[in-house]
Image (cartoon, rainbow, N blue to C red; front, side, top):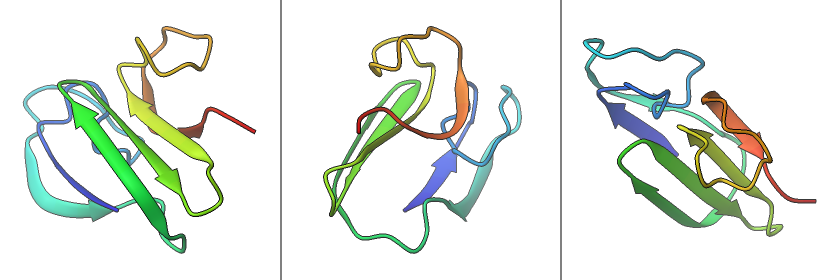
Length: 79
C-alpha cells in the first residue's frame, strides 16, 4: 500500500503526524502482504489483507480498536 497527503492525523501510516507536513511522495506501508480492499476518508484509512485481517490508521474515531487515540501506524483491529 502506498499513501501520500497532508498527514494531519497520521494518515500516511508511517509513524508520523502533523499538519503542514504535506508529503506528496508515496510512502510504502504494510509491505509484504496482499490486500483485497482499502478504504479511506478524511482522517483515517483501513485495509483488509488476503487473510481477512483488518488494519487501520489515522484519527481512530471509528476504527473499532476501542480507543479514540490517533494511530499513526497501521494497527490490526481484528483477530
